[in-house]
Length: 116
Length: 113
Image 1 (cartoon, one colour):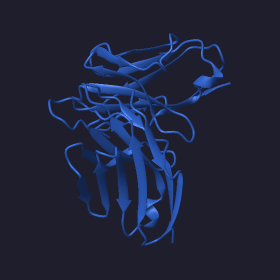
Image 2: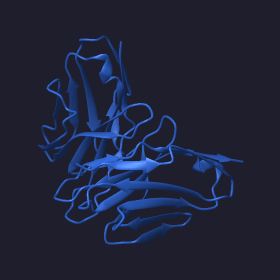
Image 3: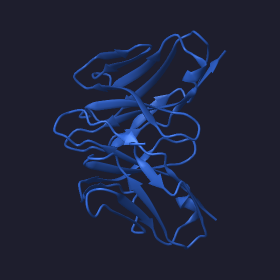
Image 4: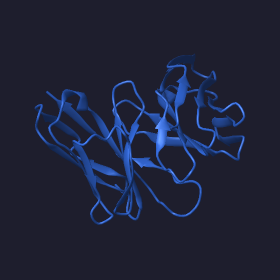
């Protein structure tokens, strides 16, 4: 499968614990995005990377959230001191990032986080 | 920032009929509008997209129209089939070098055989 992959697919944690998710983009895609999706809502943008540089961050991304893409390939999203309100599906997407107008974002299957 | 509103939230049609989903956006600088289909428990998948300099685009049974003046765009599905049943999301991308997508809240389409 050459699509975007995410691990783990499901994570159950207790309130106050830290969690980390991983996203592997489509090979040679320069841009990588994180979104959060709650039940009955569309995906909400969290942050995006151009290679290893984090270029945009949403106001939704509180100080407890941090994302990295150290070598411009895979990315990790860490949530510290989880709260019940963090329960959601965390989606990763990647795009080619070539010069030009259309830059289709391809989504991964998501990591479903449940905070007890 | 960009705000995208989507209507209706649910839509039921008989197999073979057409379905229309409408979205409005707030940022007049937005330049790209994709539509994603999400089946239960699966990832969002792009079905069609349109640039701001194009008024209409078709791909077999699916078409998207854009009215820049009114700041709205619509998805049209003709000859609906049961496998079209899913949640559909519209999205907009602001100009000025931003690549984030702002999504609508989704439309749950049910195609009744």
